[in-house]
Length: 332
Ligand SMILES: NC(=O)C1=CN([C@@H]2O[C@H](COP(=O)(O)OP(=O)(O)OC[C@H]3O[C@@H](n4cnc5c(N)ncnc54)[C@H](O)[C@@H]3O)[C@@H](O)[C@H]2O)C=CC1
Ligand SMILES: O=C(O)C1=N[C@H](C(=O)O)C[C@H](O)C1
Image (cartoon, rainbow, N blue to C red; front, side, top):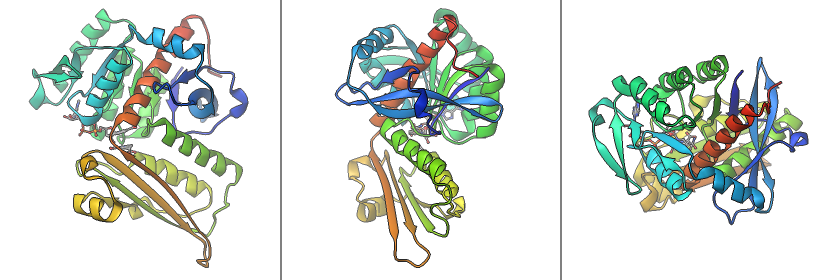
């Protein structure tokens, strides 16, 4: 059976008794709770933001984190490096091996003071097998590129290793089916920043409770990212799907993609130091007669919000795997 933690997704607040995991920024009051919902023929877990004060759970999380081995693919990328650094800060054991492109194969890179060897696509299977041989409780965190999503997920499933898939794009339906068929624990989300996930969860609640509430409204969507981003924002697509459930008609081709640094600085106010790593999203709704308007915005500079979320997702997965051994099941 598949255990896919798909965020954003509907909330089933009644099931709050299920496992929760704390975020690593200890000063924050937010915790995330795993809930389940039945969709098509398999279950997705969704994340909801709850307000909990730091508790004994935090200490348990920390203790649990100490020896957890994490393989980060790809440690050559911006997200991969941020995840390695967040993992080291959280006390996790970062495996000194990572997937990369063929051109980088054989290189050793230093990330967060740790030497990590890069392995090209042709070595992926043997490398993963030998890492797994050594670290039975391995969790993989994947932030690569959209066209690697499906092949990588298939490999993780074949090897039987739980994974966090932060990489956007690829064939998402194929991805879910791969995980479902393999019965692997996985967290799959285009958005690992938990505060943004909470916003998405709120959007899903609104869409679920008030379908059609914005019928006839027009929607304008603008997203700005670093020029190297290869695809349309997966987060924007998820938010748009909520607006569609709320009755708004919108074609993804109409998303305004901003990738020009000059425009980002001058028009959007992206700080210059974050030109190479930011995610600004604006959604504007207008009523048919133009008398009512709404605007939603989430602007992120840097990578730490996603990296910390990805590490918490890895800890969460690890707990799921452990609880399965105690026949603790969340599947219907
Ligand atoms: N879920 C989330 O919260 C977030 C998701 N992302 C997504 O993560 C992905 C990576 O983003 P960045 O790190 O900013 O991109 P990046 O371009 O900095 O890094 C991607 C890395 O993947 C490597 N790569 C390319 N093909 C590969 C392959 N076949 N196997 C292994 N490695 C390969 C590249 O050499 C590069 O180092 C994107 O899809 C992005 O949209 C980014 C930020 C947050
Ligand atoms: O590539 C990025 O940078 C980001 N990608 C994710 C997406 O496509 O939604 C999340 C965030 O927008 C940053």
